Image: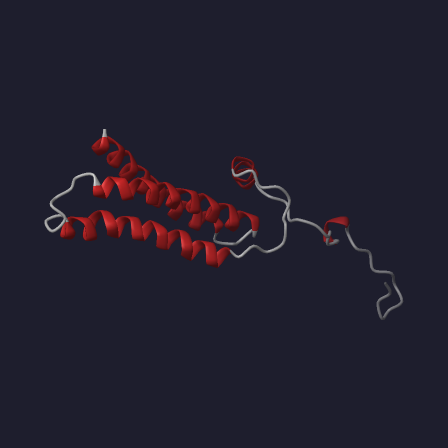
Length: 138
């Protein structure tokens, strides 16, 4: 390139933009390896999976702590009803939570670490409920 004075402008190698994926830090590489994420495959629907998995986790909690305790007297206090429904719903919620974390990392979303932290907290709570339900059925 020539400037108005006629001198050549030099561009340093670090100023050149390279097409392709952005370099990831060590934590991102570890998370991508743990989540089995390959190279970027376009922009997945991050927001849809986020709302679906959170809704499923919320449904599981509503069933366990509001619906079943209120309906228990009318159902004849069947102790196995709550755990029998809670275990499959909890397992499905955990699957959706992992899928949502994967989508955030696939999209290289700027809030992926915040979302992953939130999901991990929810996953620990749901997993504890599933373990409790399994113990109640045993």
